[in-house]
Length: 100
Image (spheres, rainbow, N blue to C red):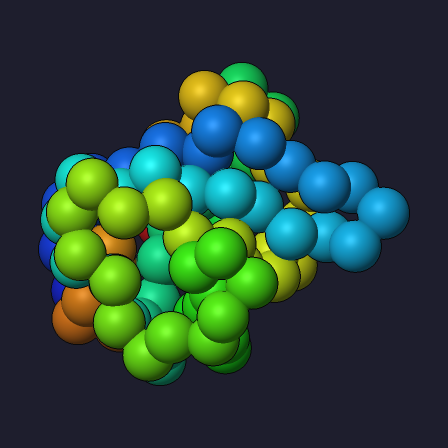
């Protein structure tokens, strides 16, 4: 049986710019470029690696709790979707189903 990844909630989506595929995340914990995140909401449920991140249109490598960041996302998200930091697995873009 495959080992399940560990996660902790690090923020929520506050806005999504659909034309450019950028999500605005209000952080409750630290996030770094290269981290694997899991975005989950009513219709979103995917993982991705953070390739780049901006604060006020300026590139940053790391952001802390209470900061608001923009990141390019691989799929559509919605306001209120939750963002989790994931570790313990390689990002595949797919979420393992319970019981598999």
